[in-house]
Length: 370
Image 1 (cartoon, helix red, strand yellow):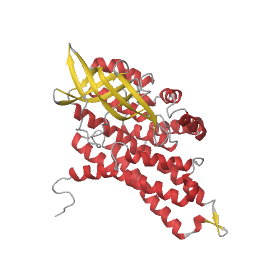
Image 2 (cartoon, one colour):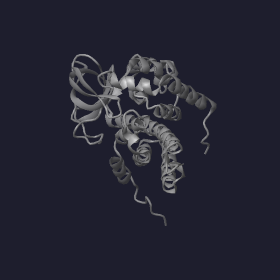
Image 3 (cartoon, helix red, strand yellow):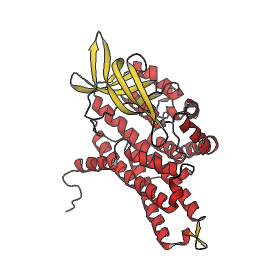
Image 4 (cartoon, helix red, strand yellow):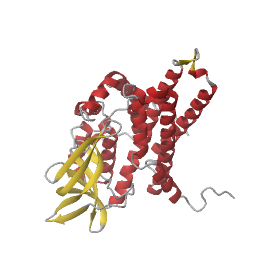
């Protein structure tokens, strides 16, 4: 199997890396955090690069690319711990293109691709505990139109979004709806631990458009796209964390020598390196399985998110330990990578949840060889 990236993929990586290095420095990020954790101008710059339309077909104004290109982009954004939720554009592009009627595609895909429309997935509920089949939101049909009611939690940039992908029970079965911001929609926004933005969003008889009656399949696909993006973003943040830690160890001195010369600390860095490469390989695995049949895809994405959760927690915590007190100060960029890795470990299901998913999806012969 060829794991080399194509010339187009390398050019895409280079373009995003240059934007991060030149246009999204630490001071700009700090300013965005102080302003609330989301900057529409920055999101527009991502759209100008074509990134919001990565999963949108070319005939709808997008780039028509796939999971590997998405992984390349999210790695670079992870290196810059970019706050704006590009993963949500990838989710919306993939789900609307894959499940929505033509009229919905024609209306919303060009808006997603241009950055004009920020469409986010609003699926988490207080009682669900990461389970996708647990949903109290409801949808009622009257006079040929749908109305959605319910409350969704931790919705990425929920008070800044233009529309929401909302799973809700319709006639006792989970369906997926698109709800544009307007009457019947209220959002209470707040800053997240990593400095980003989220919201509690309440829908009260909000006008909705049916995306698909097979809501669970569409929601599982949406979350898997999000998991793959999260894994890639985590790899980018891990790479930068490792770089910062190595630079610090080669600069900081104790007893007249750099601490990088201490054998015990070198062993810890070796352990971190092992987790870094495990994380990278499983992120590749997740992206390559994103277009596989549903059961195979779900099993693969759970495995990847479990391994990334282990790696992100270990590397983040070990980096703080190797830095000492400076590793948790707000003025030092490394502490913000630690926060990001901690939050990513919880995004789209924490490590314990996905360990349970891996276990429940094991076949009868898993781990047993005659």
